[in-house]
Length: 259
Image (cartoon, rainbow, N blue to C red; front, side, top):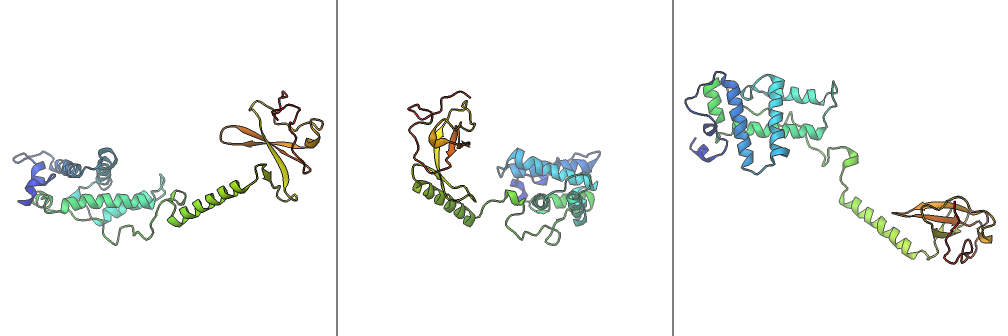
């Protein structure tokens, strides 16, 4: 007990000498949880994200087993995990969640069984029993893979990230090598067709141009091509031809006709 004098969360620091509780078991439970919280606070663990969820899980096991920490055994912990991973009533927990629960309860029981804190001696003196570890290598989740979550949320490996950037670099090189007059291929319909890309304001019509609008655009379909912020028009010409200076006679090359 001499070593326990300076340890936050030690039993003799949380229990008041000479005080007799009418219901000693709940009082001991609260003193243990307060001491565990104090021990975690000295490690600068997050109050909301780590400490409170851990304490809530311990209380959950107390409620589930209707027993206290010094009365728990491996079967109690196994029953809780088996219930949580079953599909009866609620969505079963994932393997990674179950592993987190097991780690939390193992840490708590490790705190109680550590002789430097003196909780085992106090429990033996007052209740004739001592706390024990409830998870061991035979009833814990075995970690055999690096990632245990859903496949869609898995982080990319180094090789996958490298392949992604290689593909992006290849597309950038292809875009830079493309002539300034953009050319698109109509897959399955023959050779490449000339494509004239003209910006059009959002309020302009995207209907097919009348056959009489320009000799070179006769029968050409106008397709919307959406970019990051502004829509574009693409006219796919039926026959390869030189793009006219203007599609409707204006000098700026824009279609100023109202829809």
